[in-house]
Image (cartoon, rainbow, N blue to C red; front, top):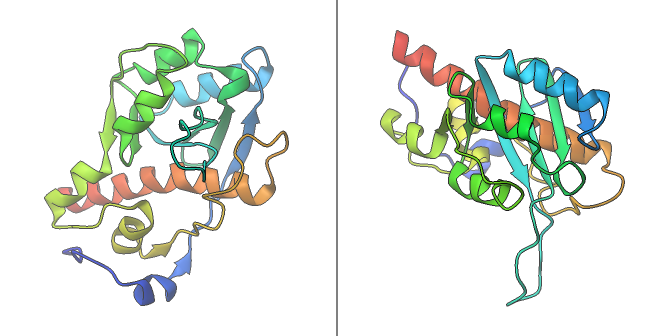
Length: 197
C-alpha cells in the first residue's frame, strides 16, 4: 500500500477522530509514586511516543516560554510530566538517553533542545517522523497531516494553544497531549509494517 504524498483539509475533516485507548497519568513531581511507575513502565517498552507542549506566547519579541510538559506513551499508558515541577531528573534523562527504547516524535530536535534547558543529556534512540515519512513518499510534516495519511485518523488540534502551565490541566488538554505522543508511536509501527511487506 503506497501512502498519499499530501492530504487536503476536507479529506482530514472526513476522517474518524483519533482517541487514545489507554490510561493517562500526570506526573506532578519527581518524588512521587507516579514518577517511579512512569520510568519503570516506559523503560520496559521497545517503542514509545514522544512529544512536548509549551505555553504559547502571543506577544512579539518576548522570549519563548520554557517547555511546560513532556508526554511519553506506550500502547496503553501515557504519562504527562509537568516539567516546571518535575524538571528532567537523572532517571528521566537516562530514559531519554537509552538507545534501546525508541522515542518516536515529529520535529524532535526542537523538543530535545527545550528539554535540555532543564538538564543536559545525550539523546539516543530518537526517531523523527518528519525525516522518516519522506522515505515513504509522504510530503506532509505536521502530526495532524501525517496521521491522516498514515493512519486515516484525524488529530484534533483544539487544545494546542491552551495554557500548558495551568495549575490544573483539563481532561481535554490531557487527552490531546496523550494522543499527540501515542499517535507518533502508532504511525511508526504502521510505517514499519509497510516496510516489512
